[in-house]
Image 1 (tube, helix red, strand yellow):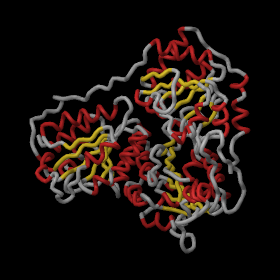
Image 2 (cartoon, rainbow, N blue to C red):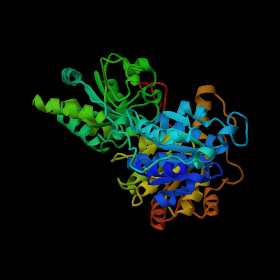
Image 3 (tube, helix red, strand yellow):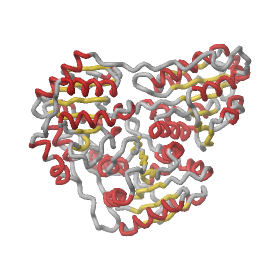
Image 4 (cartoon, rainbow, N blue to C red):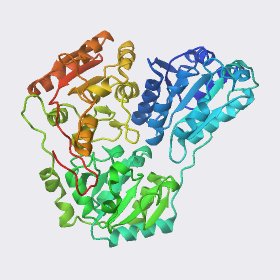
Length: 554
């Protein structure tokens, strides 16, 4: 059987039903077999967009997708998407075409060592030069992508390898089972004892809880032990935003005032599935203080790397939480809320940032007020980087897991639109909304063509202030100047609505906050890709700081 057909058959056997990519001469043998395998392919307009779409497909569905492209610049365009997925622990399989094996290392046309380039931003990368090695490497790639801390993998296939024939029969090799890492019983008992002896404990849930599918168990644990819940940015929606135990987020940018205050008053942190990113912790001396940390993470390299721990447990988040629940029930533990915990809902609301501004031009905060009021809990949001993303993280209420898809660790401008496409493919019945700025809008705007091509009814909200506003704010307060950040020219140009229409999408401009909800309704009812250009106050600043105890509020 031809290797290209073997590749596609193994993809299907490993559960790949969807691929995003751009065909090219060096990957065409693989493309030939996609239709027969019933793998639905979506043509991206830039290779990076294909990876972001595959990334978001997993974030919503929990199922891996493939990203496919040709060699040379096509392959190198994958790198930013791979980095974005890798740092947020998102598994996907990227397959790149390559020049023939006899041209490797000779600077031949579109012949670049993408495996070497990609290794720092993937869990693993291979250039397979022996046809008979392809099945085994593919199986290993899927196993690595799914195991422990998940992440992307890349397989580079020279053209002559793809077209070679090997002795392979379906069913002769199989998917390699993933064995989840279980915690030690003594560690679980000690962790529970530390929580019970603490006066002001908090439960810190990271994105790993969602990746492990442990949201329900985490909420059950919090309720059983009356533990206040704080989430990291990637775990937004891990429990409902109005739950009586939900405190908010901690962070120097997307933290909430009450989340930071409550955390600083704690004496013990039970952290599960997080890696203590610098935007979460800020200055470590303030973050660590004199509180003790229990850190549970599937990746043992994360434990103690940034925050010193009283107890570290290398284990799958779901297995660890289930073990904590079982031990607590075995000991007959069911705690009632302390006065401090019982007061969470009232104090959380009292410290909520103001959003109901009635100014014109529209204050950006008002946009999120209207978003919260209009869109239901089943709406999926994507967001990339910038003040728009920070406001989104601070102000949006998300009540379900896998409904909020940010590029967290990488902060990738341009993630929003292709991610919205991947999310819509993963959940066709959901309303999918990309929340972005006018600067980020232009980074991968060509993917609107993919949305229009397949009539994927994503809604794109552009908070348009004519600035690279996060950089403008940084220049203003960190360096005392402003230069090269004004991206508006003419009268409110470039025009996102005209750009959208050029791709076959619908769109409109909104300049008054009173008109936002009716615009949202038209976009939702259109069932076509729809861009709303929202003209907001140009120099509004966003609350942030260098330490969680000194966030500057605006």
